Image (cartoon, rainbow, N blue to C red; front, side, top):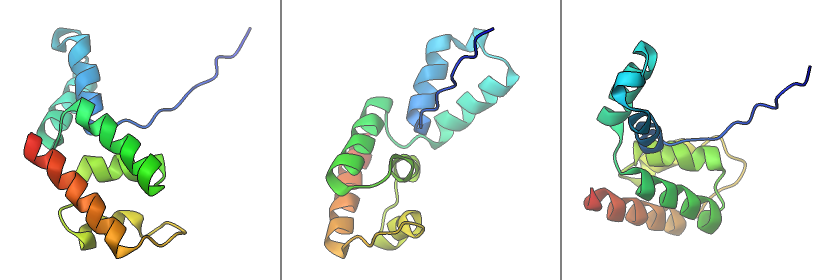
Length: 112
């Protein structure tokens, strides 16, 4: 008997919403429907924008993927709010970089 290796992937709320919608609401169980409802209510950008934002935050700003996913899920509007997501990290990010991150989030927030 072979064991399958479980893989884990961090998804943003918009990506979860897109995935569940692709399955068709009639094919979802009660838990999946609640999850879709939650993702629909709290998604702040579309799935494609969320994916691009996570990639940019990881590549350009050196954030961990988990941090980037949480930032995209919540889309903080100020540097103070953004710092909450980065408080547990070992590195300190300059205020100028945080301002750039906020402006990047603002650009995508306006597109929705």
